Amino acid sequence: MLKTIKTKIITTYSLVIIAFISTLLLTTFLNERNRVLELELVKSAEISTMHAEILSQEFSQYIAMLKMLSDNPLIRQGNKQSINAQLNRLMEVGDGDFINAIYIDQNLILTDSKGNTNKVTHPSFIQGEQWVGKEHNITVPVLSKFEKEPVIIVAVPIWNDQKAWAGTIAVAVPLNVLNEKLSAIKLTKGSYAWLADSNRTVVSHPNKDFIMTVQLSTENSESYPGFGDIVKQTKVQDNGYGHYEDASIDESKIVTFSKIKNLPDWTLFVTTKESEIFHNIYEILYNVLITALILMVVFLLLIIKLSNKITSPLRQLTKEVKAFVKSDHNNVKVIDSKDEIGQLSKAFYDTIKTIQTHTTFLEEMVDQRTQEVSEKNIILKEQNNKLEKIASQDPLTKLYNRRAFNTLVDKETSRAKKNKRPVSLVVLDIDHFKEVNDQFGHEIGDDVLCSLANELTSDNDNIVCRWGGEEFVILIPDVEPDTAYSYMETLRQQISKTEFPPIKRLTFSAGIATIRLNESFKKCFQRADKAMYEAKAAGRNQVIWG
Ligand SMILES: Nc1nc2c(ncn2[C@@H]2O[C@H](COP(=O)(O)OP(=O)(O)OP(=O)(O)O)[C@@H](O)[C@H]2O)c(=O)[nH]1
Image 1 (tube, rainbow, N blue to C red):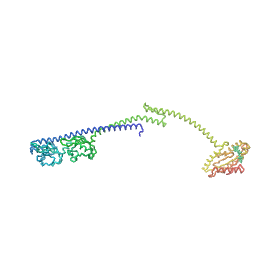
Image 2: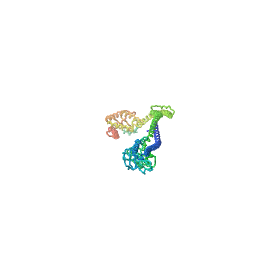
Image 3: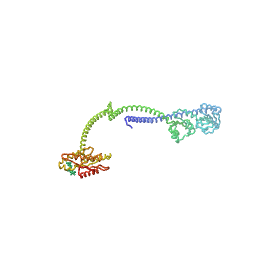
Image 4: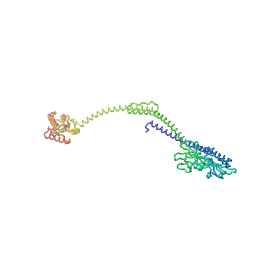
């Protein structure tokens, strides 16, 4: 895979850069994550405390308004007309925060700004001795007889001149006022504020379905794992924070909480999605990643350029060496550089020069040796031919000897068989040759044998062999039996008339046989040999069929 230096450099570079960017991003993420989370928690805690304070001040204002009225002499005296006027005035200065203004007299008869009158029975309206030591009372949301929605009753007592409870003056604050006030709180994106009363009932929340229906529990539920622990904290701390999971949207959230001074045991929560908190980090990481990628590409281009600069002379050198090996070039160009590649190319050049010198020397040596070998081969061939001839020749008559004849017979008989042509065999023996030797001596006998051999080989197509002593065998191929016989008969007559000085007359007896279908040479020879003996027995100087 990583075959070339270039791919090795680029792969190594890419891996190093990827490892570097990953480490950079991871380190940035881990460092920034904790720092941002800490900052966000501090900020969120401050925001929730501040808004708890603002909400508390709202209620302080309501209490201050009610307090002013409760000190009004006419109201203290229970002046109906004045009370009605003040209740209406209260509604006006409430600027929409109140849904109703209420007066309750000593007999618990309630009069409101809408003109309703009623006997109070609701336990949230405290009376008489219950007011001792209390300057005001704020209820949890209650359902009043005159309102459609739950209201928070903010009430202050009216004391008579004898410092005895003379009645109560109160305003009903609808829950949606709380919602409006909370939603007016400026929070970071993905954050929202909400409120739980002293019974841990959610009384204000961006999700309307939660209002007056959700009761906070100290148990960790499956829907909000971790939230129970935060609720537990609210019981013992005025401020705090914690994490929980919103399983319904699979989102981690952080929550800071603060108690509200004028609303005993009410808690203001600020919830923030973790993804929003880390949004900035992701943005930083994204920017780092983009910058890193751009730099990576720029450096990659530089690396490619650099590796090309390094590897192109190497490729050129490789090409030249390959061409030299293939004999396309008879030289390698030296790369004009002082660096390692230049040195390598010079080393190649020197090596090739040395190889060329050695090659030339070797080629010359091989030529010389080849010449010598071929000369010796010629001599050897001649000598082989001579040896071959000697090995296959009768030394006296130069005719084929038995060994060579047997080989030739095999060849001729197979050829004849293949071509379906006849082959005849003649066994020939000189008559009374002993007498020649005895009379003229052995040397003359030898001369006569040679002269006869010459006569026998007058027909080139025949294969003539000196079988031994004064006995000859002739193979007559490709000739019909009668023709072979006639040839032998003519030869016999001719020889019987020829002089072989110093002897006057020489005759021979011969047996002739044509090789039969599927007959072996041996069998045929026996027939011819037998016929030759018959010729001898019949008086010699004749040719007889075997
Ligand atoms: N000079 C000479 N004589 C040879 C050679 N080989 C065999 N002889 C002689 O040939 C003679 C053969 O004699 P025999 O076998 O009695 O036969 P023959 O005298 O020819 O009588 P027939 O064959 O019966 O007609 C012997 O005297 C051998 O010594 C040779 O190479 N040179």
